[in-house]
Image (cartoon, rainbow, N blue to C red; front, side, top):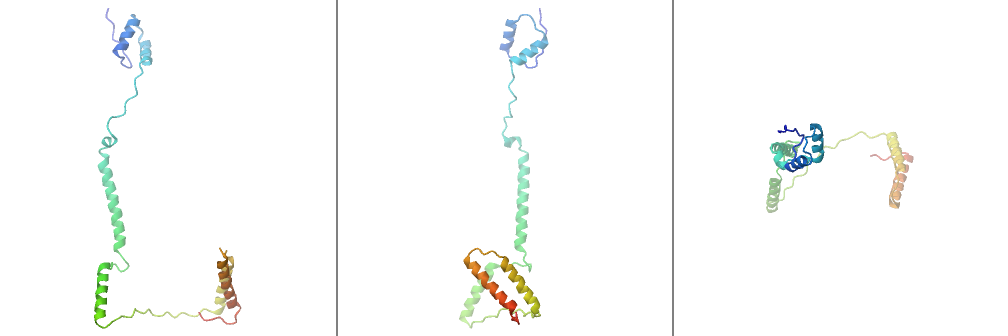
Length: 178
């Protein structure tokens, strides 16, 4: 008599089929057979892929390298622009300046010493501060000195001397010109 083919959820191994046929010569219903085979032969969990991480994402690496390179180039160029530009727009050449300075010093020693005076800035004449504003300013400074907490004895002594000078200026009839 020919048996009809059995449908399994998981294909059993040949040894398990032989054991089932030897133990029960009569065919079992398909639902009970499926439950017994699934319970008897637990299939192992699916294996992780055998490829390495780098090979799995081999198309991601060139893009990652290109992005990294472009960010590095951007940062390099941004800092380069800050260094090149100065207020006048021209960066002085440091090595040439040092060579010309050395050459000028050698020439000046051989010949007569020529020095150029530094450019003088015009003196700004400001209006004198009225005495009452000066007194108010001295009072404000005195109040700030009183609020200061000295850290050690020397600082306390220095603050006391400054307060004494301020009190002297506040009490004076005429203030010195600043």
